[in-house]
Length: 490
Image (tube, rainbow, N blue to C red; front, side):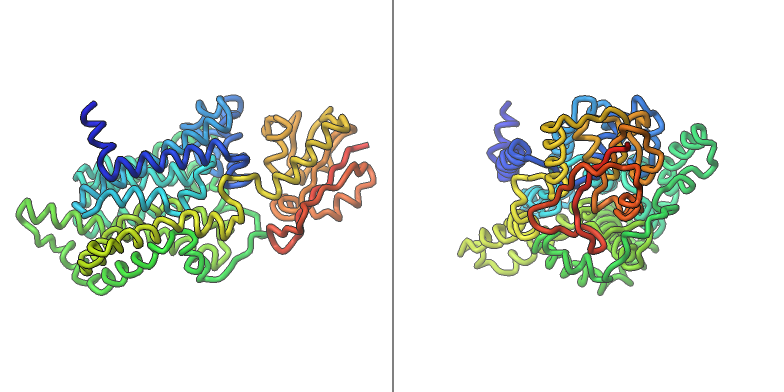
């Protein structure tokens, strides 16, 4: 009990206590979720995976997420959200541990910077996979610093099955082991892929299940398009906060000495135990922490720029590298403060901390999300809510099947989206039978479902029931307006 009391009396204890209150209130007062339709789909896939076992291996749903969250999802979406919130705080605790392992000054700032990082704060109320994916990278850093490289590699080997970008981080880890001459640990990085591919092969008969069933490699979606090479750079401050400036400074300093770093690590010039420990910290910082940040960041930058693998340029994907960013920012913040002793005397450090942490509310949440906290349902969900309320008032029931593209429709109607006796994709509306409902929406209809409204309107066997529009025009994708039209098959 004394140990726990001492923890809460420390700065880090106060950080966790205050942050817990803020995050818990955020979830309790949330009227919606972060992540939109993806949150609903990941939740539903986990919830119904026990009925449809093939969902456990669905690579869009991410097998690691689906398997681990499947028992939790049986208790509802809120249970998944609370579990993700617990993971965020566990990750913050690990970030604190990493800061202490690196013997960084003011280590209590690490969890504070992490928990107030905009991309973390603004995706807390969700069932998104970015949160658990980030855990694998954080654990790899933690166990590497403890010199438990086999454990670290085994854990990281499953990261690609939490999010496909994990393969990029695996590549970074392979470079770390290669250039630091720890070659014997390289095979451990393949363990997760071998296990999942073996299971996938046994179930599907596909020898290279990992690649042959990957929805991004073999995607037919072209509606997402592409964007500027500088997309993620432009949005870096709303995503990471002003700490990103400190990260850029650390990156510049590291780039200057990159040649000496590679030579030193390759030759293994450190012989004494003390020098080996010192060298390991700098190796992990350079190859793993800095390397994973920029490797992941530039992978998404390139994919969005080239329009590859159904990249949509989503900002939330940067959640995965929030922890490495925080570690590097803390290093530079400490240098900045130590170089200016008057900061402490003038108490200007509090201003700096406020600026660093205040961006959680001041950037993404308010500027981008208008009234992002507490979380409200998005425009699309609100319009679909209006549709559902009208259906209840008019006694419009789902006597047959529902053909819809938006995942929230099946959530509203409490339908198993994988039960084809009750639900079908919108693109299959031509197979509807008498009494079936067709829900066309302006986001997924013309894009993912490749079903423009003209095709629906041209079908004379459909009876138009009602149209639902947002209060203000909203164009979610490809400059197409969002609205919902409800039909019934004659």
